[in-house]
Each structure stands twice: as structure tokens, then as C-alpha cells.
Image (tube, rainbow, N blue to C red; front, side):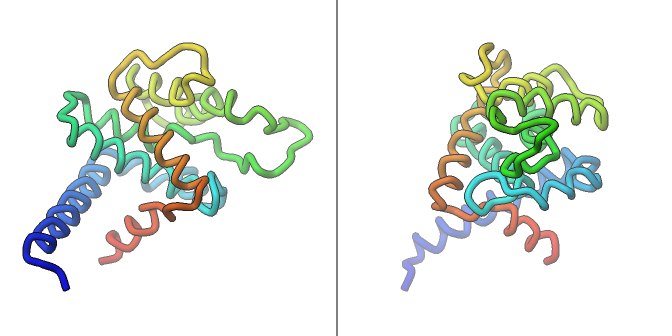
Length: 179
């Protein structure tokens, strides 16, 4: 049985989660409703987590990290960059003779940026997030704090997904949308 203090803590976490979910909805309705973004549900990123779930998780963790550490940043660009950081639009686990995905970790940021630039008007911060989120595999480090935050959140989410320690919040976000 939970104590009142534990219940209060859980309620705060749930409220924070719902608030961040609303922030994501407000910052990126065009991305969340796009056909190509929806297609990312078809590809696995790490473990059993889809690319769609992964980028939503990274957006949630990026927001939480920036708020918890009181990092001043442009949260809208943070969210949009996080949602588009893996916008490469292919299954990197499937062998492809035309464009082999062997070095996916090194090259997918450029592909994601190219795809995102075709569909959306990106700011310099959003471009920096997408282009440099794989640092240090990409040689030039992020320029903006938003890109550092997303890079950190991406590493954390990737680790948890690869080790199968969490399923991802994307599925929970879908459930919240239906409620």
C-alpha cells in the first residue's frame, strides 16, 4: 500500500508526463500528423522499440532533462529536433544492396536531415540537433544546448532500449491521445 507521500510523488510524475505530452503536441502537430512520421512506426530502432516510439521517448526525456536541470533553451526547437533526429525513413536492420546500412550510425544523421529538410522548414538549432545527435560518431560536436540535450537523451534512450530495460513511452503517448 502506498503512503500519501508516495501517492503525491506518483501524481506529480504523471502530471509532469501529461504536461510534457501536451507540449509535444503543441510544438509539432505538423510532424506528428505527417505520413512519413507515421511510417516510422514500421521500423525497429533498438531492441523491440520502433523509430516512432524512440523519437517520442527522446523528446519526452529531452524535455524532462531540460526542466529538471533548469537548462534555459528553446523547448519548441528541442522537441521538433528530437522528433526528427532519426528521420532516415528506412529499416537499417534490413540489408540493402543499393545503399548498405552497415555504417548506419555514422551516416543516418545526414539522411535524416535531408529527409526532414524536404518536408519542414528547419531552424539552425533543429538542423544542428539532427546533424550532430550521434556525436562523437559525427566528428563535429553540437553547437547549441538543445542539441546537447537531445544527444544525451538519445544516448540514454538507446541504451535502455538496447538492453530492453524499457519499452518506450511512445506506446503510452498513443494511449494518452486516445483518452
